[in-house]
Amino acid sequence: MIGVFALQGNVREHLQMLAQVGEQAVPVRRPSELDAVDALVLPGGESTTMYKLARSFELFEPLQKRIADGMPVFGTCAGMIMLADRITGGIEGQETLGGLDVTVQRNAFGRQVDSFEADLEFAAFDAPYHAVFIRAPWVERVGPDVEVLSTVRSGPAMGRIVAVRHDRLLATSFHPEMTGDARLHGYFADLVRDL
Ligand SMILES: NC(=O)CC[C@H](N)C(=O)O
Image 1 (cartoon, helix red, strand yellow):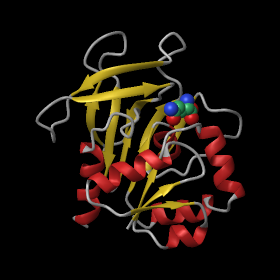
Image 2 (tube, helix red, strand yellow):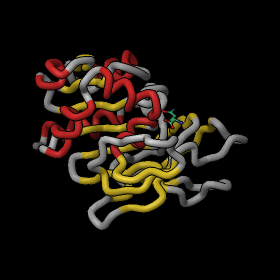
Image 3 (cartoon, helix red, strand yellow):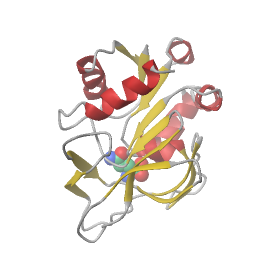
């Protein structure tokens, strides 16, 4: 069963997308609920709030441990920041769960383009994927075992890395739950089923 971290973000939308790809998904707010799932979606929101909430709900360390033990996680936007081993542009003392061997730059696309949309190419998909970015991070550097799944194709951010996979960890800069295109949730569900 796949869980959706439910202390912040578009929880319902992620649950609906997972249902669309045939997964019965459940919200995760407490350690016992985390114990009951095999994989997790970390939604977008605000990573500074997210790590504080995870700490106060006593989910931070259990999450770190599950990730270190190989639980598959799909992090989107703030969720990508939470998975990153290293971040830049974080607030003083901002912690991440880590596991994903990348450096992520918070709010990377700049204030003028707080949000924008772009069509992305994924080798795994036949047709472009329409992506919605909201105060999004990008991946600045990737470790040797990280696969770059997609980059921005045009405009000032051309070439920037916005989707990566590192073994069982999948992360996107954008919000895949907002456009009704369930292919990335399907990709994640396949990754979980294939274990
Ligand atoms: N849409 C989002 O998740 C934005 C992420 C947010 N800017 C952060 O740094 O946490």
